[in-house]
Length: 189
Image 1 (tube, rainbow, N blue to C red):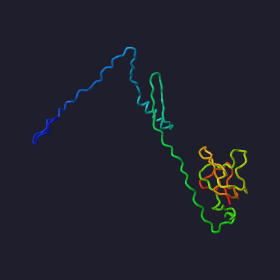
Image 2 (image 1 turned 180 degrees about the vertical axis):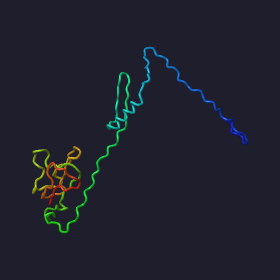
Image 3 (image 1 turned 90 degrees about the vertical axis):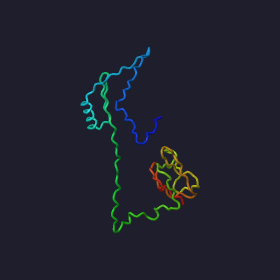
Image 4 (image 1 turned 30 degrees about the vertical axis):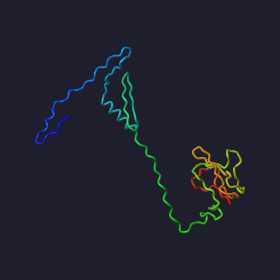
């Protein structure tokens, strides 16, 4: 351990001579094991620049040239792909007098109390398989907990059950139709 310098005394200057280089020891040959031979690959920097130019011009991410025992591979990171952005369409200007044909008739609007809505995004099916009888029909009486349709989401078929007993007055989707979350599916009164 080195003693602390005393006040008024300077530390001795470090020797500015370089340290000797450490050289690796030669590997002793092991009988029966062939040592790999390292060779220096000669390369042309202009050829590599030309390959890099080809990469950028063509949009490729890598090029590899193999000739006899030598190989040159030039690669670059792929540029990120940006997804197209769709902007919402501008809202139409409100008309002074909306035509009566565009407004839904009061009898067509589903009753909020009896409407069964979709609990997920998926594909609605009214029967268990193509050609089979549908789970429900318009005017049919249903009981609470009865399966009224299936919604396929992520390759899983989810049963949609009637939340209450009553009569199916309207079916608002068709079989095979995509549905959104909270979309009205049918009306039970």
